[in-house]
Amino acid sequence: MIVAIVGRPNVGKSTLFNRLTESKQAIVDETSGVTRDRLYGKAEWTGKEFSVIDTGGYIRNSDDIFEEEIRKQVDIAMDEAGLILFVVDVVNGITDLDEAVAEILRKSNKKVLLVANKVDNNARILDSNVFYKFGLGDPICISSINGSGTGELLDKIVEYIGDEKPEEELDIPKYTVVGRPNVGKSSLINALIGEERNIVTPISGTTRDSIYTRYNKFDHDFYLVDTAGIRKKGKVTENLEFYSVLRSIRSLEKADVCLLLIDATQGMESQDLNIIKLIQKNKKGLVILVNKWDLIEKETNTSKEYTEAIKKKIAPFIDVPIIFTSVINKQRIHKVLEEAKTVYENRKRKITTAKLNDVMLEAIETYSPPSVKGKFVKIKYVTQLNTFYPSFAFFCNLPQYIREPYKRYLENKLRENFDFTGCPIQIYMRKK
Image 1 (tube, rainbow, N blue to C red):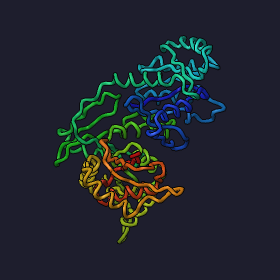
Image 2 (tube, helix red, strand yellow):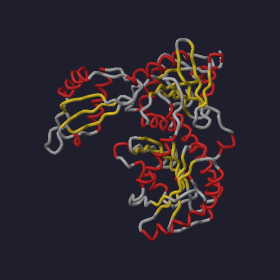
Image 3 (cartoon, rainbow, N blue to C red):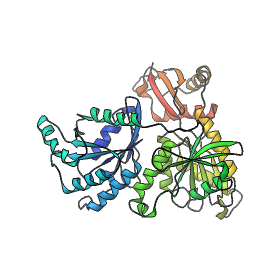
Image 4 (cartoon, rainbow, N blue to C red):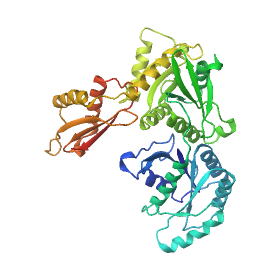
């Protein structure tokens, strides 16, 4: 579920965002937005995970904010999020901009939690009563700077997540098509489902208008998470980057495997790399499709050179299938489905602890962790964790001294010995 933080500038939205996403150090998961930092993070409380969106970074010309600009932010957040945190500032009280945001939220059918920030002492708790004027329920008093009250806020958020009805769906793979505008996402979806519509069954998700389309033919059975072309154009023109990142996040969270389309005529661009980072952070499977390959002049090693160029840009996560397609000509569409299915199976792969220790302890003996400050790290044991993506715990005497390059060595050894192509691998160092 997506939780959006809205409110006028300088009420402490970004501080609250940092506080929520860092509530457990292990699951801090921030992703830079296309033009601003602090946009999207993962948070967890009492075993429930949710996404947090900070809309604040996207209001331009912050010295001279127009009510209309904030209205757009709130509109988009309301469209995409399941829960809104409306942040107000107890020190400055109610301003015209607060009134404007409150009016939009009252008219929406969204669940809203009213968050009174900067409540550092008891006197300010009394001051927060002024916000009852909004008619949005009891203000939750917090101080995002020192963290007081955030536990209660997280309890309320989790309580709401608990009320969400799970979507009724079959236990089959979910693939989502992602990529920049005009790379051929809609064409791919049409190429897949456009022929025999009688076999295709759309199932509306309970979360607003995103639609799962069931594809069941040619020995394939999966849901396509359809994110292309659902919105009116008017909504897309404003705050395009903010909007497209939000859409990507929502569709990513529903997927098992992401099919990332890139335009062969333009190559891998920075926004493609941002999407790959999102896929990695969300631990989803990845297949890269180089579309419009029919428009490229071919020489002997064209596809090999193109593959090398892509891998150089996406390093260190290079163990990814790359397929050259022409969606319009339906070239290699079946290969795309085969690879997506393989990546889905790789993501669910479980290795026995005995096999894992045989292979990995030998690799560790061959190349031990470098000593730090004269201390030697001894890794004694490894096991695969029971998560929905490949993750491994290495038990050792001094986990704090294991650096990133050595974790990459361990990951490479795992990939060499077991097939995890297309899947991000998570490595945790634990105290023995």
